[in-house]
Each structure stands twice: as structure tokens, then as C-alpha cells.
Image (cartoon, rainbow, N blue to C red; front, side, top):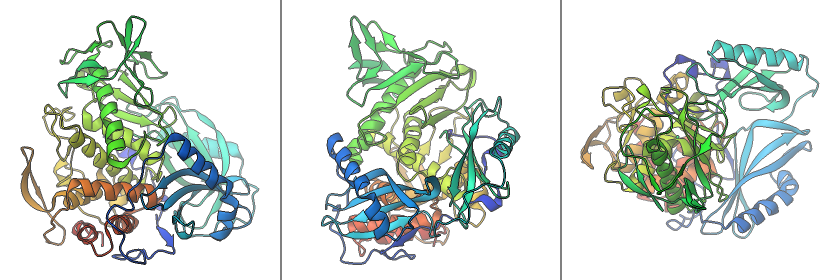
Length: 551
């Protein structure tokens, strides 16, 4: 889970020995700081992803899976290792990037994911791996019982304040997320976190010593007329069933908006209406209020359109299937979250049940957690967790600008509409993250120990500098003044290009363990592929990372 905001120290989940190194290893590509893939500069946007039809994507996935055994041999995997296709991205120039999960002797390899890059002619151009370590363990027989691992996981969840924690049993895995791969157990603990958010805590335990190796949250904190609270009067695509309208968008993968009516589990009840006018445009504490539903449906609609129009991505999983939204979660719940297991996003109603967390950038933020989960799968802890949160802030910002809504104009602020703090201030600032009192403006060796909502500041700051540059300026009536760590002056390349670079890095060059150093490499590779290794865009990516002390 990745809620939009967490107030508790408990969310810094990784203990010092469990933070993954996150090294990005790219075989066949030059990935050192400031380096670019070998060969001539790519034509501008030749490496931009193209939109595949559902049948074409399915066919390509099946083709890659059929060739998985051969691919495993070609990239030098061991005899007991197998590849399982997770995703595929095709560029305009015909290059295909296939993302794989890995198994060893039939066991899932956590932290073993990789991306194979293949040219239009079918020639392998490189491999991006989550770990450079060889996957091999001395024994597949655990020395501790599964029950002991499960008990430890329950203890970890309760120590973090989880309520009514219950584990679903421990499964054997290979842990390759940090250090030497080992036989381990993965236990998933359910129940609720201490702020009422559903719990899905994954705990990794060494099967030989019983030592806890890692832990992370798996729930990631996200034509009728809609009279919304935050975005004014908007158009909503609805469905007429008999004489009743449903808040059901059949044109965007079948997205539905449900009412939990203060509940904390289940799907809820689909919103219906007689006149196809949803909400009143004003706050209400009623658990049946349609206004929050209108905001949520509008946010889902704009987020779908943003990804499709900007990147050619057909839904969160890129398979044309829409998620669902649930509003009126619990009572006075001040958060919103994405849960990949139900493929749904959920919104609380905030203070006094009158400040629902359904603003446009929050919707874009939450749905983007789903995109990250189904692409790079950035581990929600340490530096990779900060990059996970930053990705949602970056794309949530992109959604807000994309919508062009006059009631909620685009800005580089997160949650400025929902008044979470009670004093009118935003949750986060991309131009100078430290203005929220907690977030990091620049990278330091301890940044991975921060709450992921605060370590995200480094990447948020990078994205702002890459888009708009340093110094004082006013955009859409909002004043910004972005500093740099090294006192340099950065001239931005524009938000449109910055978004393309981040998306390509996320979907083709980042892996589950990517840290800030590896993110610099990933975005440089993306800029080189999109605009060329001698381009202004490439040089600005390097300069923006240096400006936040990632060098």
C-alpha cells in the first residue's frame, strides 16, 4: 500500500541491513554516470512507446514467453532459472523491451526481475537487471519452520501498529533484493494499519537463520454532469441501465465508482442516479454524498486519458482494463490509497468527513502507483520507495496539467486542494520539497532511511528542475523559487519532455531495486534513447541530477 501521506515514523520500514542496494546493471549498455548507450544518437522520439492493440500486446507477450527458455540461455542464466514475462513495451523504431520475473528451481526470485532490450531486427541490445548477483543457493531445504517465519511477520506488523493482523502463511522464495541470494520465506500480513489503512505487509525471512531480511507494504498509497468539490462542473462518461444511470465508464476499460458508505472492506455499492447529474459541488458529511464520487470518477477519467494521450498507455496495466474507485472509506479517514490486489483506488473523507481526498492530483497520484506496480515494481522501502512515491507525484502533477481544468489549474504542488494540514498549505512542493518541513531537497547517504513520502523529495526536485529550471518564476499564478545543491543554474527542457523521459526510464530501465544513483543512469539512458546522447535533453538530465546531489 502506498497511502498519499503517512504521519507515522512506522512507515520507514526497512531496517539498516535490509535496505536494498538497488544497483542497476545493464549488460551491453554503458551505464556509468553521464554515459549513454553505445552507437549513434537516436532520432528524436524514435524510442517513444507506441500504443499496442489488446490483441497485438497479447500476441507479443505470448511470443516472448514462448522464447523465454532461449532468452534465459542467451543472457547467461543458470539451468535452474526460468523467465516469466510480466510486461512488454514496443518503441516507435521497433525496439522491444520485455520485462521478466525470474524463478529458481520453481521458486519466485524476489529482486530478480530484469528487462531484455531487443532491436527491430531481433538482436539483443542489452539487459537491465535488478541484481548483478548470480542466483544460486546451496540448499532448498529450510532450517526453520514456515510457522516461525509467519510468527515473526505477525510480530513485525503488530510492532508497526497493525490492528487485527492475520498472515496468509509463509511461502518459500529466493531473496535477491540485497546481498547474496538466499532461500527465504515471504509472509503477507493482512488486517489494518494504525491509521485505519488496510494492511498488506510483506515480510521476508531468511529460511536458514530466521533473520528478517526485508519488509514493505503491498497496498500503495490515489456523458453525465459531475458537480465536483475541487474541479467545478465537469463531463462524466456514464452508463444507462434501463432508466437508471450508473457511474460506470465503459469507454475507459469499464471503470466503476463505488460507495463504501463508511465501510472498510468489500467493493461497496455502485453509484446510480436518475438524472445523470452527480453531486452538488459542495462538501457534505453524508455517507451517500455523490460529490466525492464525481471527483473520483473525473480523476480516474483524466488519469486514463493522460496516460493514453501522453504515452500511448492503455490503462494502468496497459491491457485496456479499467480499475475501480471506492469513496467514503471509513469515517474521517485522512488518506487515499491504491491497492493492487483489488485493482482499486480508495478515498477517505478527511477531517469531519467534509474534506474528501478526491482532488485531481491525488487521483493521478494513486492510479500511478498501479502503473509503477505493473512496470518497474519499485520496492516500497528505502530509496526505491522514495522513487515510487515520487513517480506518483510526478505523474499526478502531469495529470493535473493535462486536464487543463480552470477550477484546479496545473501546478507543482501536491494536495493543495484538500487542505490536509488544515491551514491551506499543500502536502508537498516539487520546486523545493523541504518547504513541507520534512522532505529532502537533495540526496544524502541517509535519505533512504526517511519516510518514503519525504525521501521522494529528491526525485520530485529533480523533475521540477528538469521541467522548469532553477530560480524564481511564476507558473499559472503560483510562485516558485527552486534552489540547487551545487549553486548551478539549470534551464528546464519543459514538462512534456521531462514526463517522456521519466516514463521511459520507469518502464524500460528501472527495476524493483533501483536507487537514486541507478535512477540517474536510467533517466540518462531514456534521454539518450529518446533525444540522443549529445542532445540538450540528455545534458539537462545530467545537470538536474547533479543539482540535487545525485552525481
